[in-house]
View 1: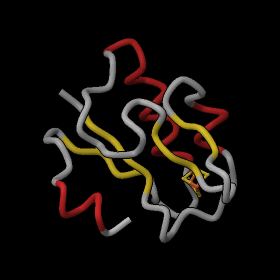
View 2 (view 1 turned 135 degrees about the vertical axis):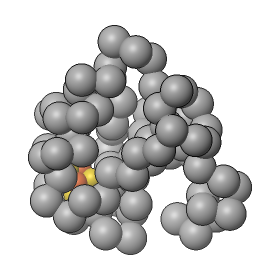
View 3 (view 1 turned 180 degrees about the vertical axis):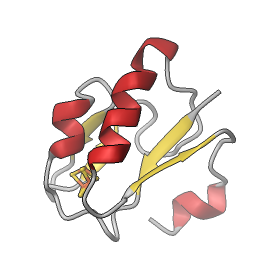
View 4 (view 1 turned 90 degrees about the vertical axis):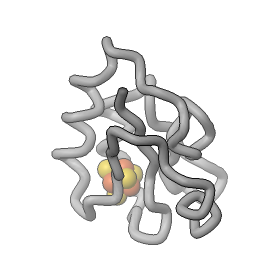
Length: 81
Ligand code: F3S
């Protein structure tokens, strides 16, 4: 399985990820991107049919803020957001 979340510390709100993967990434009240899949927790697997979009988003982020892992992101990692 594949998990993702946005590092809001480094996201510069460029919006490219939301263009590349509108079913995965949205914009929060501060204009920063976050994962719609599980409210940026990185604990819910990305549906298989969205993995190409995820790769595009990941490749296209200018600040490498889209974190991707084969394991769920830990609660610790989420709390640092
Ligand atoms: Fe932010 Fe990167 Fe998306 S800068 S808006 S996470 S493409």
